[in-house]
Image 1 (cartoon, rainbow, N blue to C red):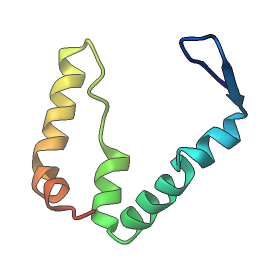
Image 2: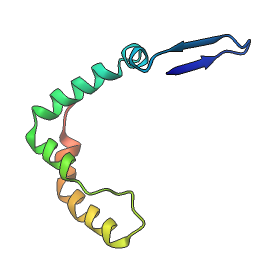
Image 3: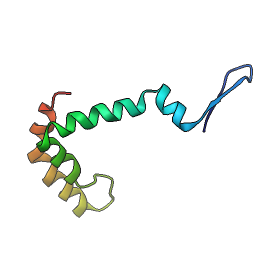
Length: 79
């Protein structure tokens, strides 16, 4: 459920599904999926990339070690 109000206190609400349709969120996700499916090398890099959200130096090193060799491929990916 999405709810918003303006300065005068008037409320507007819609379901999550309506919000995603209105914001074209679902359409955007489908388009990104088509782009990624057309480039298996990009999809592999995205799916197998370790997380950078860590406090562990070892995990951060693992992320950097994976990310750097794939950097050119990800930058060259034309959307």
